[in-house]
View 1 (cartoon, helix red, strand yellow):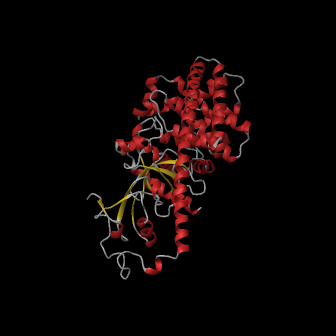
View 2 (cartoon, rainbow, N blue to C red):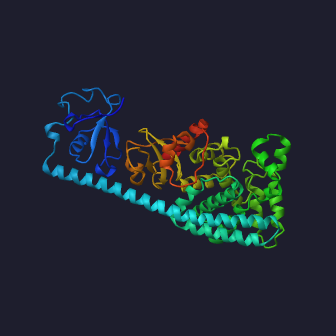
View 3 (cartoon, one colour):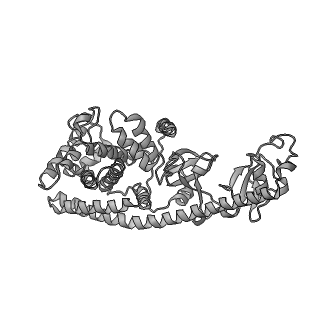
Length: 444
């Protein structure tokens, strides 16, 4: 049933309301909600710049709010003394001011996103030259790789730039998958290494190995690489599993290439329990650098799988790393990655417990299950979009992560803060794993 207009006198507890007007014209976190408290009724009756509507189907039957309150939820004693009214007005003003601050933070974030996108495109252009040089055996490719790492380090120094880069990492341009994967793994490895306390010169070596971890795949033809997504034959898998050795041999031909980086290239598909390749090494035989890169590589492969039908959302991928790969991957690096990205990384699309859809724009480092979210509302222009700080909202949380293709086009366009966005298929199988991770993190 459609919403119907209602007068202030008809308001009561239990009504499901919709406020038509600017999001900044009232102190409520959203424009649609069910009235639950007498204090909310008092606030609603004092609103001047909104039209109030209600949904009969979603509202509680009249009288269900309790007896003895005259039907309006306010007793004479609850109306408040003048001092109480002044305090309530100040509280409402503070809540509205917080909305303005969230909105300004989001505008700053969009500007930062545009700036970082331009810088990231420069890195991508350099990456294409780097791959051409390395394919032809030119050592100039290593110089370019070092320059690219410096650019990524500069972006990641600033928290706002780092957050913006996490959004751009969700892109998956056709034809640049190899390079994007290399940059993603390099970026994530830097984030993990910094949080673990590695020194700058150590991070630079780690980043070089991470950037070039799959360089051995350049030995394969495009047809062979395509078989990564289509072939299940043991022969094809055996051939593709040789790329770590190919990569080490390629880079070992450059005398100045650090041996620590060679170990990363050779070991990034090994696993702590001995189930990896090419040598089946166990934890003691794998370097710390390689342990970091293998976590970053596994995460990005899950999010941007060669077979799009097997791609996961970022939160699903983190969940599986946390719950299903504890024996095979270095747990310290996995937990550090979650701490850096949050359970719902920036750019994640989410369904909220109140039925709304939103885009995670920032992680609350003190409450990783409750990030800051831009909410879709067809009645509010995108430039005035509703922004919720879930750490401050007791009654609203995240129900689940969702994929862009599961949303209507108008919702996707409203919530998309960038031009590039990945379209993942539905894959609900990892929801239990995600719930397990959230429960453990919330209690830790």
